[in-house]
Length: 292
Image (cartoon, rainbow, N blue to C red; front, top):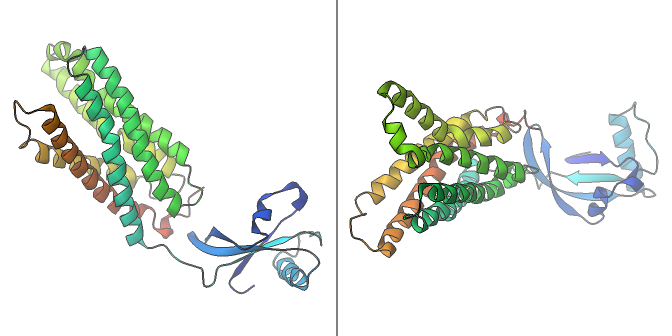
């Protein structure tokens, strides 16, 4: 029916979603693996337009038995149709991830500062709680962009997966804090593989966790594992490059915290820029056909 999509509402009395379109309402639908926007409205029985819409629907589905009292939702996608640009996606992703990681990083930074003189077990517990907060905050900001690009994207699953990945990464990273002395007594032949394994787990934990959600939406989601790793390597290198020359012995807690905050902001921006380059490729329309 021109540039419109017709949705028949069978057993309408048992459903409520279609009632939202009794007045025109904006909606996003997927056509040929591309999300497009349009305006939907109900065409109720008893009108000439309903007869026309029903005739078009019946012609397209000749084997279906159609109740003459079924309403239809007609979605106009002609002038409203847009293909969201990759540039917009990168910009939104950069802003969201920079803000989310900057805020999230404040949790482990504060936990580390407040427990610096505490027992190792207390430090570890505080940092693990902070790690879950950091992962959750970052994922919350990320999910807002993903839901904008992929209507229906499961934000809760993304947040839980990211928090779990962050916990795994920080748990491995805290092993030296808890068992540093014992680890140093182990043979070099044991230390090297252990350090290498731990580094790999820390590097890929969040990426693998997020991939478990993203794989349902793109057939190129595996790239996210590598993209996330590249982003965090670059981000941590940027953090070290900024903070190492500035941190000096004898500085006040305030100065130290300000330097850490600056480093966290730079790290967040670098992670956002690097992962965004991978994300626009993963979420290109041609790769979304495998999504659930």
